[in-house]
Image (cartoon, rainbow, N blue to C red; front, side, top):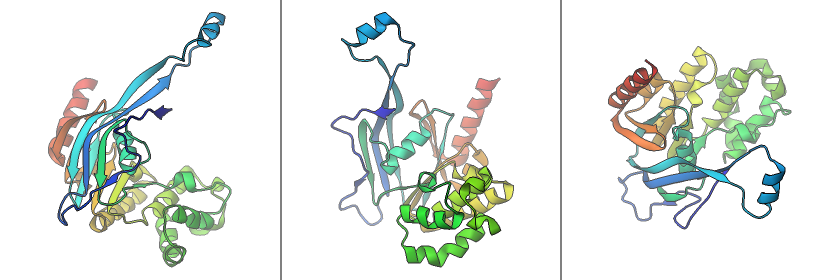
Length: 267
């Protein structure tokens, strides 16, 4: 599944040339992303013959529709919304992982999406995956060696660190992913449900680490279904629904409005 692009699309966030020192860290202008999903219908002989002479039918899905916002250095922005509202898609556009079909994304430096799952290998040990995942995030080898013990301790893997990842439970894998990925402290950090990993103790540790990253990173965007985390960490929240911004404002105001709407639709 991919997105069509037009002449307005950018593959990476554009640098804010000549931006003032105290200006915004991220500016999004009319961001749009539409997927073209091809139909997977059981073929008949007539349809197979017809498809030789015309293109396959597809359906357009507007995942993000005209989103505009500005984020300042030191700001933590929570992104709320139901499944399929466009939250994760918007973060991937910010990170440059998905080219938008319209609009622009400007950033002081390349936003980093917290997550290294794709880089890790199930057949390798946790120890080797720390260096593999850290390298994928652009962390120098010497820095990984210096922080190795800290990563292992934070993940809480103990004697499992030299065992292959295929022997880990899902919680152990999630803890290792988070421990490696949260080693990075970029100017613009994007977090997609990363706080929802592991048991209650590790979730608390994860939240403390995010607060630490917030102090070191310029701007943080957090997608989470856990409103408690958004309330504790974020000063501002944005409510997305069907790719559109429903509300943008102080966290408590947006979270309360979102909760009321969820209760109303469930009653």
